[in-house]
Length: 431
Image 1: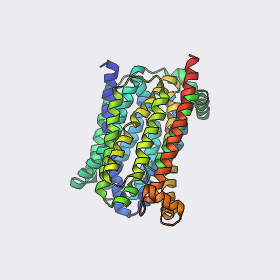
Image 2 (image 1 turned 45 degrees about the horizontal axis):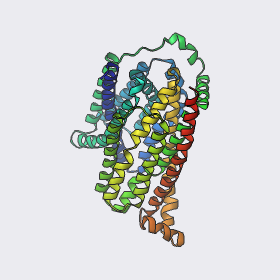
Image 3 (image 1 turned 120 degrees about the vertical axis):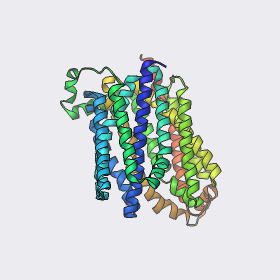
Image 4 (image 1 turned 90 degrees about the vertical axis):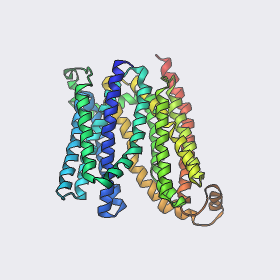
């Protein structure tokens, strides 16, 4: 293993532990808030309080990232999250913790994450050579899926035995370890800030430069748009109404737990497979065909499924190609974007990727409750046709939504592949 990649692996491992601690805290606070209020909307506000400042700040954060040392930004952003954890720990210990305090903390963390995300992405690219980008992306997919699997399990275990304070303590220890490794072991040569003074004179000028660059990089811009559409469709169905659909059709929390756990297993296996692959000659195949395969085996198979066996197979297979999709996008980002522009471009990527969260959460729930579920309880030839496809009863309306998002996703990815492949060939011919 090359020295630079070895340093990245150490950085990745400790950041993963820190992410696990943060995810455990987030999960524990969801449970705490729900226990205090008994209202699902109170839990939804937690996501809203972090996502809105994150999205608004992402418009401007890329310019700041490009103009400052990435290590310092990561340490400062993680430090804000650490101080927020200490505050919650102190309030909880003093029996003074209130729900509104957690909303305020989430706003601060959302603001900090808008800077931490692009800075971490750019720093990761500095630590690895271009021929290791796919391997790096695979490791990131492994850690993301693993955190998704283990955070709720470990947090629930610690909560049940030791309480919320111990979860917060674990989160704090993980931060200290990650910060120590970043300070001591991760060393990168960054361009002198004096050469980049012009980059921070006008925030709006920096934002404009980023969007002007993307307008000229047509392959990269198209990749952002097609991935943004995939994310919107996924937020409407797969990551929004999957839980209520399975609960409605199975009546079992155990079945839901099995399916969601297998989704994480599929992501981890896909990540490990990705680390073994070479850099792609065409990123269109990994991005669009990976998305197509996921919609085909995910949304459609989940839609037609009636039991845990079909849902479980669908959960594993549909998540397998997602790390391939991410690796294709990362290869395109790191190889096509000048280093001095990467902060702005990564910020735009995060804005497009995560901008669909509030839209999808709002649209998915409203359409399920007010349109599709009532529709499937009615009569008529069209409803009878849909019932023959997806079944009837509670959850059938949400199954129709999966049918729609899956069909739109497959068509979009199929058309997107031909368009993006053509753009790639055109750009490569100019080199």
